[in-house]
Image (cartoon, rainbow, N blue to C red):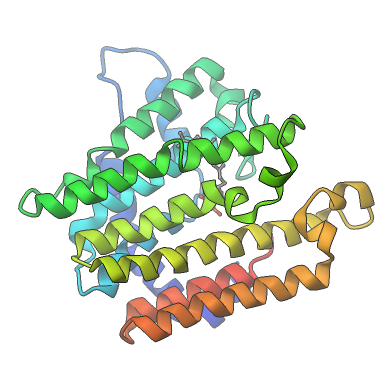
Length: 299
Ligand code: GRG
């Protein structure tokens, strides 16, 4: 990521400029238990949230608002919701009953450090804290806030992240039907659903039209696809030489060159949607660079 900074100057400038406000909003709405509850819950909440996340989802919400002429400050609480949902999903995903990961962001995973029970409670705490955040600062725009809230609920649910994770779970245990496992849109559901939500919530609160929102969704879905294709390429790098393992990923089965070309095409399609539909300006430039960043990133 560091090496790409100069190519994505507008985006990283934007991220750096808004990072202090994002971090303080993340702290402001932290789901902390009252002081008389003397467990390690609050320590675990802090450990889960302040462990080096890039805060891409909050940035998408701010950009979603700015793309439609909205100011970033009023949507900061809604931006926080995306990061809380993300944090919650990572905690769930790392559990032994899911992906069983001992590490996250180069550190001991939450359940390894604090125990599975507490990890589940912290994940639910973050999820619960996210639901109301789209209403903060928008009491005077209840229709927009209610629409944003409905999208948030749907994003987490059976047709979004929870359903998407059930596919991954089935794949891991070998229980998925072939057609489900191969469908790329299903495969990307959990990643693209939250990117789409983060962007759209900002746009909805800033007053974007239904047609604008459709275009934005298409852009976000392509971003999710690009993220997944990038992950597959990273896995290929890591698995180089281990044929069987590489074969399990889409990139492995189709070949590296094909995967690279598909990633390129996906990013080009995503950028074209932005340029053909939305006015030039800082927000659009940042989103274009966001797409480029996903195409270039390597672990
Ligand atoms: C109920 C919210 C909820 C989820 C349950 C477990 C689950 C369903 C979904 C898992 C979702 C998951 C782990 C998706 C992959 C997410 C992903 C793309 C992570 C990497 O995101 P970055 O690069 O990470 O933004 P940082 O570390 O920067 O935050």
